[in-house]
Length: 172
Image (cartoon, rainbow, N blue to C red; front, side, top):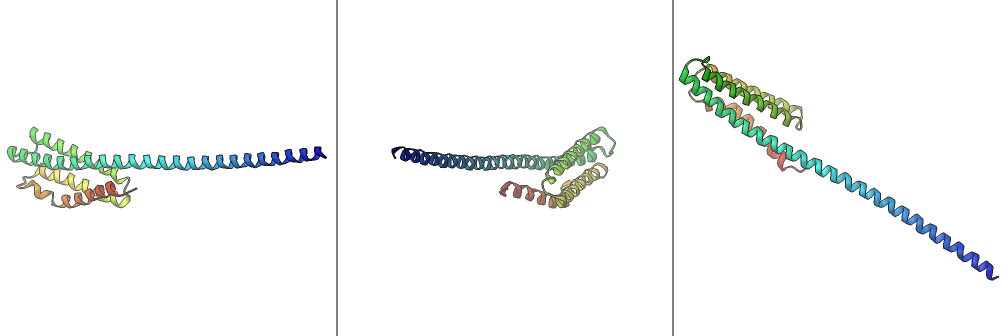
């Protein structure tokens, strides 16, 4: 009779070990799933941070180039006023610098628009075209006040700058 009690006790211990083994396996599975979730969130956080930083850098460069265009356009107008001929080397050099700045503005605007959608891409393209028109006008005609050329462009630029502010302050 003592033998039957012994065999029954070891069977109970086997069941307890099986339950503990299943519990540890389930706990391990849960911990792995939670770790995968945390890793995914971490990658999303890094991607968002990189995107926000890149957008802020492009916005800063865009603002810098816009004011370079204004400065260069005024220099073109002054050179044309001084030389009275759009084919003089100083006028051509200033005009080339202004056109180069417009090209950079267009490139930065296109890059920024890639994150904003088709409507913004159209608006940014229209602004780049307006800036190109302004530089062409300053190169070919005498302009009494170059700042007046920028009235329409300034309004468009304010909208672009607001997009930059919104992207910098909005939580992604």
